[in-house]
Image (cartoon, rainbow, N blue to C red):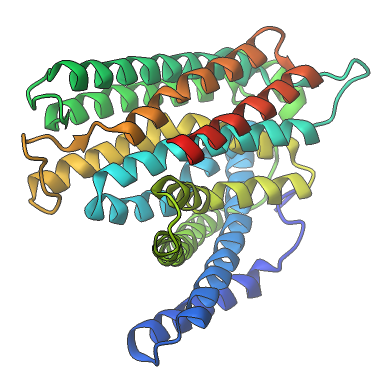
Length: 390
């Protein structure tokens, strides 16, 4: 496939990773109780499996771009959506165990993703004035999504504070209920559908409005058949699910260890959030090392947009469904998602984070050194505040 490979190590790395994961799970369930080697194998095998899956997903994305005459940026957005599968699968198990923790982990993933984006901005090529140009799809459509997400963060944050302070709502201010979760999820998913439709129609490289994106992203021509593209996509998705499950098990064990050592709950949640976003980070790193800047950029920015508009709705829908089935216990007053310091902190701190990111990319469609420094400093401080005081 033209422009798609840059290495075939995944042909051995993916099966080796799956084999290590299978061996670790067999030892965990049937073998002697050796927690250290089992956890090491879960982490190593899971990350190797995810890395191999991301290589295959890049092949599928580049092939799809060639078939549909999309540029690499739009193809990367679609590949990034697929890379959410292991995170969603892992969070489904977290929801079943504790809705509150799943919500906190999801929002922490957003904070980590914007920090990763600011780090990626440091690595982007710059012009003689020190500006790193961003695709028009980000400055036009992406900025609208950031504004919507920022509005959501401050609206939900103030709502939760008001409900808790005045015992408001149908659950005496203890938390959000079934219809709250369903309405929020439905609204966010509707926005995401329109965003994807607009992105493909306006910035895929096939319309006159794409203009600069055709030159920037380059429309990839691929010789792969639809069957091979489907094979790559299916193999990458299966591998991502297996790797995500293994990393999720490792994360659970690690959080249990941290709690036992006296670390705060938020520290453990940050660790889980980082591991949950690992597929996207590996996909970005792999694309960047291959010199596919547009593909990497689409994934690192897409990872931010997809948290509030894909991952968060999925978590809320899982919570609503599992509470209806009796898997998730209701709060004393019938609520589902508790309102407390942690849940309010992660949602409210999302507003300044998204506001600064929105301002940085909308003023001139580029990121300069000062904006990059501001993003790095603020986003790192927000994570510090959440870890220490959240």
